[in-house]
Length: 321
Image 1 (cartoon, rainbow, N blue to C red):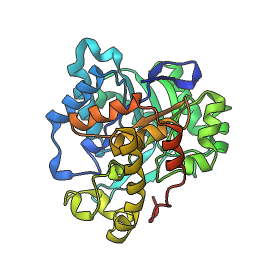
Image 2 (image 1 turned 90 degrees about the horizontal axis):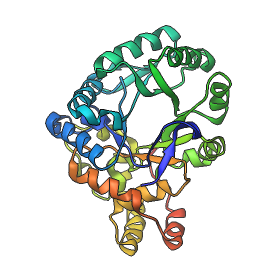
Image 3 (image 1 turned 135 degrees about the horizontal axis):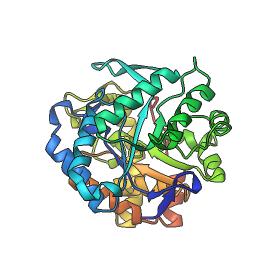
């Protein structure tokens, strides 16, 4: 896997990370297995994955506790991990995943103290503003975070789902090391709005979340029945029966590229995202070592010009993301 630097000058990390959200939040509520999730984190580190990503929203709070437990068990290998978490989204109703944004400095300070406690650390390597609060100027939120960098509690700072204009405003206060936004074969907004290109020009790492379309771009989901019964994806527009049927046209094209490449559909989907720039990393989530190993192998996959051309003009996804 290639290495990417935070902010172009900061710590480097492998281009395939591990998103831990699904271990505690959003997916397959009845199929969670803490012991296996911890084993996945440990296996990821063995394979050279160092970016381990969580957030206080996930659970809420339970995912940070799980990641903290996994890190504690790593012992001497703990220093290999680039620990990333996020704050600024507050859960109102865990049953429906309804949340609101809170970028007030006092909230972020309290949230970071709580995250440090749950994670069992005194320093977070990469802290990301989960969403920019429209009621709070980003300069105020970012300024509060920069103070905690100076205090030694935070390392690098990142934004999530930010526009180019918002990134520029934050940069005027403190360096932006990373931007984490959705990017996949069926969600290309970060390319269309110029964020990926801007990050490349500024030396900012772009971290693509949901690079497998929340599982769809693995090629293993063709109907709602392929999802566990207790799974938040049942409420997503692209996972409704008619949309899933229509969106199989995307998978058919990706599968053709996979057959030509000799890789899995998931690996081709991840490799396409990585091909969007040397500063681009992917953050697939998984709860099993089997799929973790498949995802990590995608970090060494280079798609041919023919495969990239085949994937450049896929049908538009049916359903909002």
